[in-house]
Image (cartoon, rainbow, N blue to C red; front, side, top):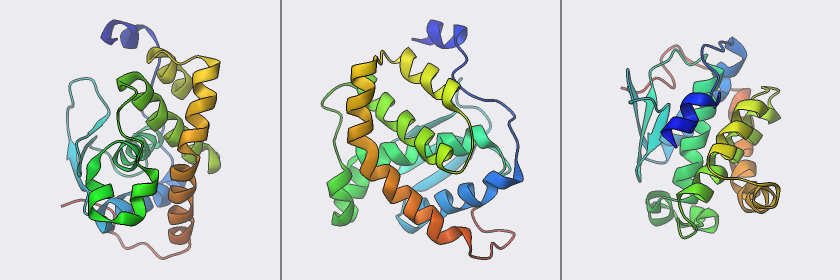
Length: 178
């Protein structure tokens, strides 16, 4: 898979926009309010982020990077869909948990399509890189339709949360992890 990732553009680099900052801030706040630690890292060995049951590692950014914001949505989607942390911490999230029973390929497709739908809802066009990413993980048309059906609840949960925070004033330090 690493070889394929080197050949196919699966992420958007340096796509900066202040318009994404409130989405990034809301996603960071979602993580913080739900006890998910987000660690900003200078290097993740070629990855853009990772999730491990209550802990997310994310490439360091200023909160205005569209691609990294999508990655944050991707990793939070993993937390909701695939990790036990939120399911065990707050039973209201148990309904979104699908686990990892269908393997890493489907897990990655689910998280990426969730993140793409969140970002597309706010007008950020990352379709090509997201579709390339799910293709790397073996998606075909039928699999993608099943994935969309699986992730709709998580996408709506995140959109409702973000929308609830878009009109709130943002302090200078809010959303920046310690």
